[in-house]
Amino acid sequence: MQGDFFDRLMAHRVFASVRPFFLKHRQAILYILFSDLTFLISIGSFWLLVYPFHISPMAANPMTWILRVAFAYVTNRTWVFPQTAAKGKAVVGEALGFAASRVVTLISEELVLWVGIELLGANKMLVKILAQTTVFVGNYIGSKHFVFKK
Image (tube, rainbow, N blue to C red):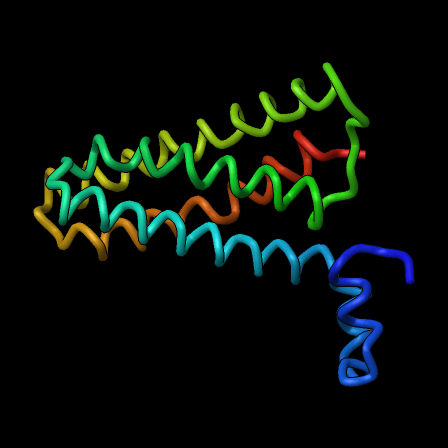
């Protein structure tokens, strides 16, 4: 059978009733799935750096950014958005564009962390979760309309 993992999974008879919905909303469903996994990577690595390793939240966040951007690029390119760059320089350009679009949301996330943690003294993890939710839409817009555009 042809197709990726999700095509093969949805072809199984167990998913027959939800297959039409999945096919109609595939991009959004997969974006949400991989965004949730990226969120877990971000929150988990942030917690690990801030609490056991005692790294400041403002320094830990850019470190977690590297992990989540690498994960998000691979999953977005592979499953969420159709491949637009075939290979070589085109893929490097696409990856750099992806990272650049994520730098914009990193800056907004750092601002939320700075205001919430440094200025207001709020709970670090709560502010991190809030900050992550604020970048979700920005990341989708950047990926769909600037990086993986057709």
